[in-house]
Length: 112
Image 1 (cartoon, one colour):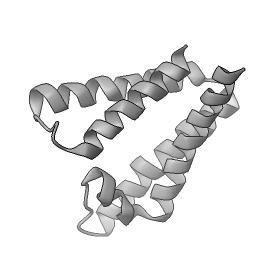
Image 2 (cartoon, helix red, strand yellow):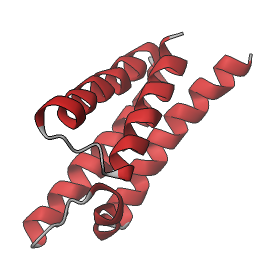
Image 3 (tube, one colour):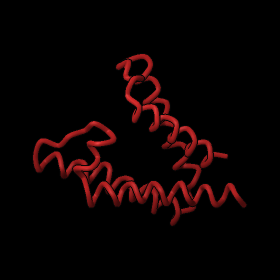
């Protein structure tokens, strides 16, 4: 029962991140460090962080595809971890570490 509620919260959180990015794309910079230098960049933030996350969250709930969303989050965590610790050596970025932890936690909740 608790795991089911946590899965739904993970999907709703994913959807909420998407809505936030869609409505306030410039705020993404504060957490990710990605800055759009023009209208094209703002559109990309709306699409990737907005529409994609909305579709992932809503689609997960509509299609009962919590395992799929878990695999997505674990994949993000693997790539982020490799990038942080091996390739880019960006472990000093606190938001990067927060994202890694959230991706691992959400991924595990969703695949269990």
